[in-house]
Amino acid sequence: MKIQGTGKNGIAVSGAEAPSAKRVKETSGASGAVRKDRVCLSDDLKQIREMERSGRGAEEVRMHLVEALQKKIREGTYEPDSRKVADKWIGAVLEETSKE
View 1 (cartoon, rainbow, N blue to C red):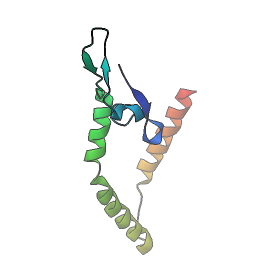
View 2 (view 1 turned 45 degrees about the horizontal axis):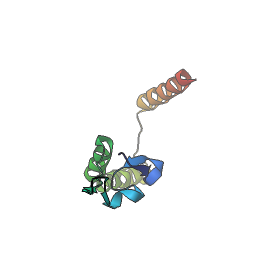
View 3 (view 1 turned 180 degrees about the vertical axis):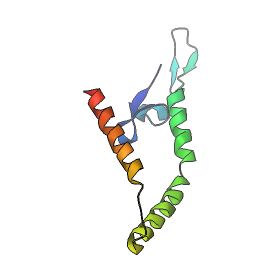
């Protein structure tokens, strides 16, 4: 049995984040034997959780980069590479038009 729900940001998740997945339910079958329901996390959920764990330190690194960029802008020393900006912009426009 696969239990799925909606997690953060509307991402479909299965396993422990699904509301009913936190319970282990014991039931009796026709033979009287006790069965336990189990929940198995999908590989996708495991990958999402691993990415969340590995990305926790990234916020500090990004803030350091943002602060350095803000300092350059305040001092008037920021010089963006116009060729890179144009290449990215053109690439994004071409990608968007190819979807239509």
